[in-house]
Length: 387
Image (cartoon, rainbow, N blue to C red; front, side, top):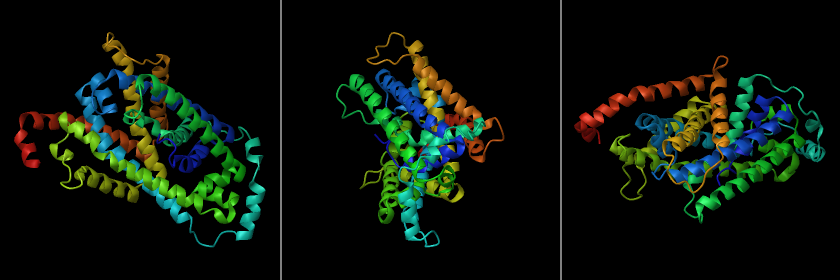
């Protein structure tokens, strides 16, 4: 699964900064690993109960109709997915450049001495819940960073072709894989606290580099280079499935036909790829890693919540439909309520710019639905000329 990506090297800083204490940091990592597993199990039921193409797009269309699916495809294609590419590329740049930073820092001898002293150092862990943050907005920021690291679970329904008897084996895979990843993540975060103080972790531009410098000594470049190329691999992966959603959206008349055009030789959705690259470059120039991550998580988890809400709606809407796999109803209820809280808390005080932009784009998508639908239905010559 794609859960074990570069997120564990880029997210912990934001989690610690928002949580304020070691204790709350570890609680967030553990509890939202379980939360992500609940969401993944809900998606497994949706996969078995909705037979349309497009995964989340299909679930939202089935439960809420064309307007919701229109907003989904435009927000994902034009906003969320290019931002994901930008985040991975920024992570690649941060880690590969940090492997070769200048010599203004401590000498190599001092670094090795500090590294030796750092191994097994548990002073920070003993601080427990000291200085725990109580501001819900700050805690939400910590959770957003945590959810970014766990984000690969949402791809679970895209990789079921190689799984035998998915209704039986897919839930088993999720119940084993995501908790295992959660344990690994908590172990990695704990190791960060044994190698550096909380303040040093928050102040580090690339915590994996700081950790490796103190623990691995002369071999520290292995970590930043490895993490950098892991981020590059993840960025590349975002392009590999770039045309899937746009292709489904074109079939349902949610996007112009040109969005599904493929290159004559490579067979790649060239327009979608180029558009994503341009938007990602703009985002890298204008945004910071933190703001882009908040923007991405806000949009993507809003749709995750809508998809899980679709599960509850379809349980009542299609009561007689056979479901090879069903989750306990408390799971989708917990997921929907949790996501609702996470979407509201950034607005309890003056919201950051990225949240204002995200909400503005949602509103713009709603406003654009009627005129674009009208043009497509009643003036097909316009779209024909455009194509």
